[in-house]
Image 1 (cartoon, rainbow, N blue to C red):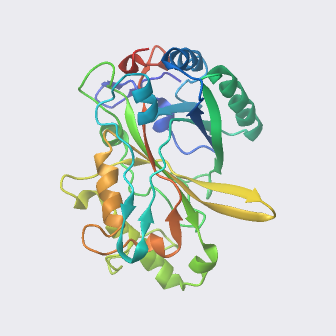
Image 2: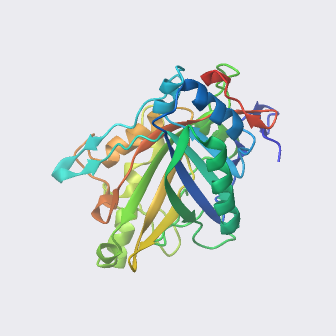
Length: 317
């Protein structure tokens, strides 16, 4: 696939195409940290080698503020994820990420092999910090994937030209146009708590009926749909969601939830949604917090593409 996505108006967004494509069957989020012995020169060399395996489609690359700063560069509007505290002890953590590679595809074995190849290319300046495996859940013939609770995720995603406007920087510089800002969180679900709620109560938490995905007009103001209604903000706060369920098994026990990913032309739209979810606007906390909580929170920048490779001129490469 070409690295440019064409709109109905014949304009071109030089983005990493995997951001616009549907949720894959399986995915892997590989987080890297900077090695203690790394300097700017070794970081640049490692990132230059990495470009040969990052096509923006099967592998989407995202750089964190710490890495950009270590390179002596600047990405306008990139910042660290803010830690938030809300009513009743609610906590939204900030866990800065240095470098994230989102591996997308249909073959888990291929992703294991690609992880090893990418880690080798990035040595010695980078080390694998942790890996989160994820997968698509729900009917394969539907446009949107489902959370493990069974509810559809991303129903209100913008589409086509509107998706590109929401997700990608446009009309600035060749170094920035086509890039995207990523808000990433790993949410842990408490299924016993969720299953203790009745069917109507679950629907009111989400703001939609599980049976047909229809939005509930009489849902409470704490319903997730109402807390994050993108058109209800001023200015409107549209993002492109590409979230996936994750699973980790250890010691005979499973932990799982949603690997949340929102791509935007800036980080502002996600941030105002998160603040409202946490009750910082009006004291009303999103119903999701009744059975789920974020374990991580990070902001990253996804560079644009040029001639089939990452365009890293913004960071001096």
